[in-house]
Length: 353
Ligand code: ZN
Ligand code: ZN
Image 1 (cartoon, helix red, strand yellow):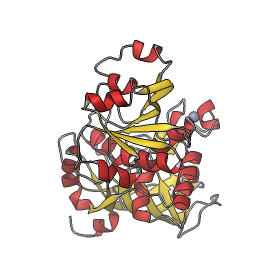
Image 2 (cartoon, protein in one colour; image 1 turned 135 degrees about the vertical axis):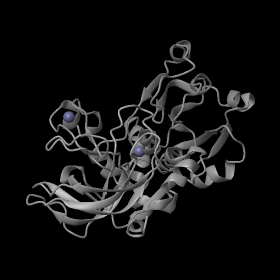
Image 3 (cartoon, helix red, strand yellow; image 1 turned 45 degrees about the horizontal axis):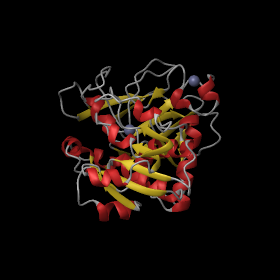
């Protein structure tokens, strides 16, 4: 019998997040049943709760930065056992046979991955519900091991904010010979600084607001450039090998492209909208510069990132909240008033709503 569990859901694009009771499936042979301890709060949770990308099905239970303990396993699961600390990120399944899946890049599955929420399960056609809930049931191939050296609370944001910044840095083989700039200092940006620094790069933060120098340096930046100051921008013309752009709303890329050296790459990880204002192709042609995008990361590289974080003592900077505080947290997120990720303590679901 499917188990009825507690969670929080949006019932429409305009209604606040509120308590919601629903069922999780009985474990299939390859499933891991996870009691959720913590879940990070991602900007895409808010975008989708408010149907800002279109295509939201209600009720919507967001949450794809999930940390929990294995409660039970299906008959054919050998890699996990009850009590293990595990994670679930943005995906819970994919076709498993296309070119992308065969390369361990399930996020680019040609048949689209099954996302952790607001997707349809490939097998039983039931809607997927995310981590703003006390339990989740996920195929073992999409469950991550949380190394013992990682703090469970601050590991949660690694499952989306972490892997979203890790994957492009690894794909473009960032290391000690590279000058890397990060645009934006939010959930993604603060992880980008930490990873780029740990990979040995010379790291710069681009910011629009002064006064972030000390904080940026604490997070791994060697330099801070005020992007609103033309003199400072001129000083870094043709300077960077790689720009990790985490800004989630349209912004002028032209001034940043001018700071890329020959063969430099500007990677978008935060923006899922038309680029406005348009980019002059001369900014790319003169200097053989590239613009690219990158989406989260595959399961194998997510595990690699978690292991790296445990080895290097890296985790997200988090602010813990109760489930009941989620609407206030969304309001604060819109004002960028969070350092740097809210994480829900799901034990609070047991309290009265
Ligand atoms: Zn996310
Ligand atoms: Zn596939």
